[in-house]
Length: 248
Ligand code: PEP
Image 1 (cartoon, rainbow, N blue to C red):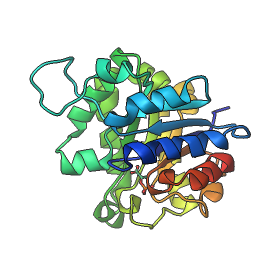
Image 2: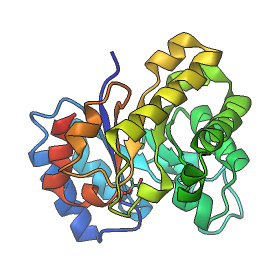
Image 3: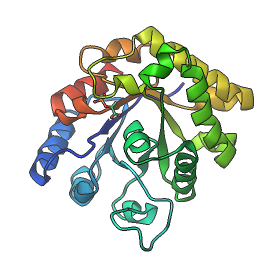
Image 4: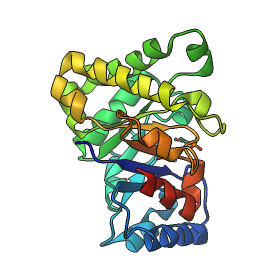
């Protein structure tokens, strides 16, 4: 039985004060949440969020990491740095990193490797563009993205990887994949993992991301192969985020 995982991706949002208010709001409603809940916060706010969530059920995540351990990489953040703040999870391969910062499947695979080498759990994001879906290439794109990671870290490493299927056309657009579209792709992802290892295919959590919100979360999370959500916009409102956490 796979545990439901709900991860909030705050992206480049909130101020110092808003980060406090958001975390306090989430904490105030966590008592009856059964899912594992992760907040992936902007780097400058990691320290304050770490202090707020200590001894709580909330887990801390980062939104990126550099493949190098240290050195002349202006503006970047290393695995050791994020671990200093109690981070256990890191988003890798988000479509915004792929499209805006040129992260290829190979770079993403290296980042997954670095995360694992540092005992961080990667939230490994994959997903197709609208044109890929419309031309019937969803499975081709998604398998290429997964294969790059399997080639880099091996199938066994998926014991410590959370996959997030995020169709790019659904991220931040208000257009959500239908439960059937999401379920079908999750089944495909699991079948691809099963070609390498049947047990790993069954135990790997596969989250859905892309305009998940209050109104569609329950239906999506009810699908057999959808094990949780990676939530952008709706993770910035404590009450909405909590309702999604409770829908799982
Ligand atoms: C995301 O950025 O991972 C995401 C799913 O965003 P949104 O929920 O806003 O579509």
